[in-house]
Length: 185
Image 1 (cartoon, one colour):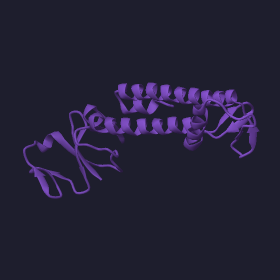
Image 2 (cartoon, one colour):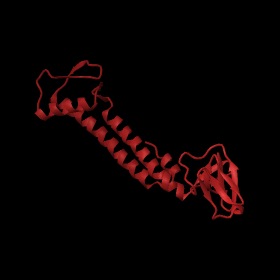
Image 3 (tube, helix red, strand yellow):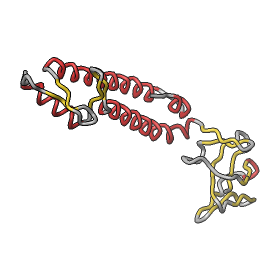
Image 4 (cartoon, one colour):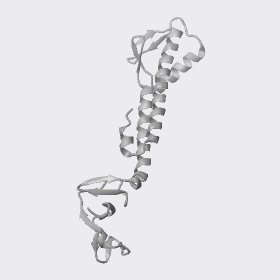
């Protein structure tokens, strides 16, 4: 891979496998740029370019690529969306994970939460009511026990959602790719 960069600030303006820089200017496959002083530029061979390379958005010095504000305009929106999607998936997984309550592990997936909501909506349960834990073993449960299970699931889901809102705000406020990468769940 070849790059053409300005000597004054090492900003890479072109990248490609077939670049040429000579007295006529610079050119690549299917294009030519003559309105430039080739003496202000340098042609170098590099191992690779950044995944989201954009001309003018990166400098290259001694094997190190550094993005600038132009690169950030391209990279940050995609990086934000990726990080927020990752956090949303983690919040959803936390909300639907099995939960410990009254010494047992209970299912809390979408179907189980829906069934629990239906049972609680009735307002009472029969005397011999039971609820199956995550291993399908039935356990005697009162209406208050089921309300407690529902409250535990709700509290955990609310905590996950609050964390998601906090992390999403931090991602949206981050001004660099490194800042976005530094935000952890």
